[in-house]
Image (cartoon, rainbow, N blue to C red; front, side):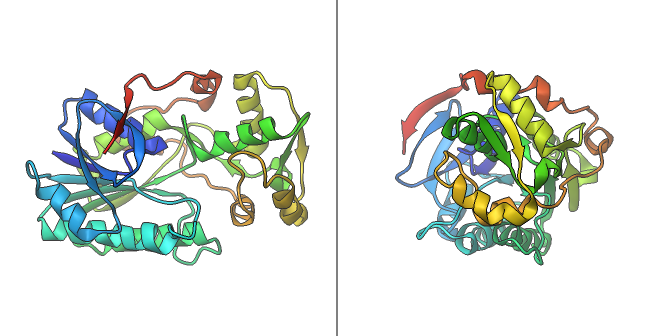
Length: 305
């Protein structure tokens, strides 16, 4: 059986659906008192990555789990949820729970750019989380993922939020020149599943990205085309990043100043990395943007735990 944390997120939902469709037994660690759309044919157990005991119980209750796929993370801090508590300590708790329950395998997804010395708080916290996994002593795999594209992702949600909140124009920081290598969420889920049996990924950091390196402006234009919105792209220079942050702060899914500043550098990896490691060629994101027209995930049903 496989325990999945972060099962309600953009990546987690698709990973769970893929695992179930492939015949795996899946258990989801469900955050207490939160209502989410839940995948069918899985076991749901209440818990929180901030509570080690709840993870240990999830791993041992109702059948032993032999793998944890840790996808629970935080992009925005609040008064009650901080990077230190969720990303850093939460990952340490997952590692400790694996040790206490003798769970031999841990697979997790971290962002490209997540480093302990990063100047940006979210990426720095993910770098520290990665170090905890690498020092765990168990059979781990860290997928270092490029920006993910799929329903609920931060990238297209941010672009769509600005297009809804601002008439006529779509402002992009850093002149829209930042290069990203977006990977479709379905392809990332396939990489996660193949880590279960691909021995070359054991105790390895495996960078994954899509088949194209695209500028932020190109990604924004593809998003607008898929959603059939017409906006004039306005390229804002890096020195006006703070002003841009204030200007778009009320837009849906707005990025904060730190996130906008973190888009000042390219986040790409080897173009053929996915094919070399996992044996398939990931899709171009321009062929996987139909969700922007309102298509939903048919395998989800509402549930409250």
